[in-house]
Length: 132
Image 1 (cartoon, rainbow, N blue to C red):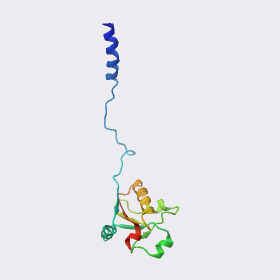
Image 2 (cartoon, rainbow, N blue to C red):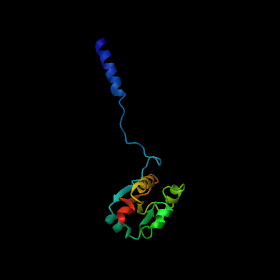
Image 3 (tube, rainbow, N blue to C red):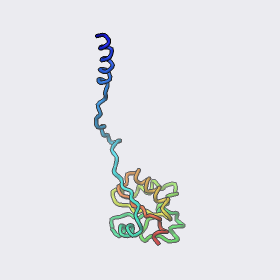
Image 4 (cartoon, rainbow, N blue to C red):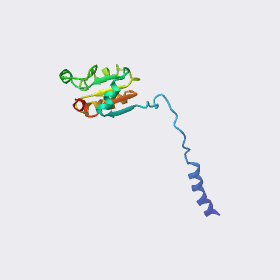
């Protein structure tokens, strides 16, 4: 009998200590915004920027922008110290179409924008080099 009790007590403790898995309580800090970052081929990007309700952003340097840019693009230099401040001035609820020279900087910029709560970010695959 004593051996049986010694055997059952650890089992009872294990069963009693089993944690119930419950859904975590969501607080304002834990709610995540579902952000979409999508890389588009040049033809898809062209179709997308035809919509009047989009924001078109060139994240290259001012000298690169001056050499040529997509019409109506707003310059927000990814390498500038105030990039995050300037990008946050855009409307986070409207689609943002973003590009750079070859896709590297715009890819990094779109990740930052996603972290900042932008809902839709579309990145031009291959950058302006693929556009031309």
